[in-house]
Amino acid sequence: MKYLGLEDKVVLVTGGNRGIGAAIVNLLCQLGAQVAYTYRKDANAETTALGILADVTDPAAMAEVASKVEHKLGPIYGVVANAGITRDNLFPKLGIDDWDAVIETNLKGIYNTLKPIIPKMYERREGSVVCVSSISGERGNLGQVNYAASKAGAIGLIKSLALEAARYGVRANAVAPGFIETDMTQAIPEKIKEKIVAEIPLRRFGKPQEIAWPVAYLLSPIASSYITGAVLKVNGAHHT
Ligand code: NAP
View (tube, rainbow, N blue to C red):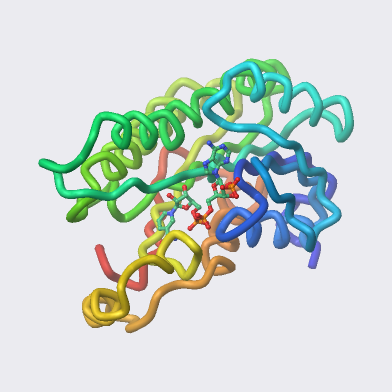
């Protein structure tokens, strides 16, 4: 399957050990990319991609990730800022720790990931950044004031970066998944899941691979070369 122009391109995926990130790592490997990914505890046993232990909330660790990837695989062409968490609660019960943890991981984590990499992309005049945002960042969601703020922030970051990076031939886009079958959504009680599914015109949650393909498309120097600053909705028409 070598037709997206990602063959031998070096791509870093954060949080690539499970869920959506693991699906992205696996697909990019199938497409011939040289893939590195970060994990915090358990590596992705199903891939031969380069796994690096690192937490996106640690700027020094993320700087080290960038230099390790360059050293072992070569100049980084693509970055997928995927790592993310939820700490849901209704606003009156939402503690400052839950606010901080989500913003630190989901928003500052993107900054920490990109900071050591973007200047080098500018120098090489080549690169593609894809950030995994969320439907919650587009339209808000009950119990997700912190998460929605972080994901809306990610969209603002990507749109601004796209404007700055265009003159260097570097692109920046986001995907905004709806509800996807991963550990993150597993905790939703069955009754609420049924209600959500009833609101989704495609009548089901998405699968991690259904996010991986749009990410690969946005990374591709062939398929999406004129797309930058975009937010691609991947949500079964849940939010149009
Ligand atoms: P998941 O199964 O819970 O996986 C989350 C991933 O992020 C894991 O690899 C996790 O690593 C990593 N991660 C979390 N905090 C990290 C940190 N501080 N440093 C490094 N890695 C960290 O969730 P998912 O559903 O695949 O979510 C992936 C992305 O999609 C997230 O940004 C999420 O917000 C977004 N998203 C998900 C959905 C959905 O319905 N599932 C919808 C819209 C957007 P560990 O294994 O070490 O914890």
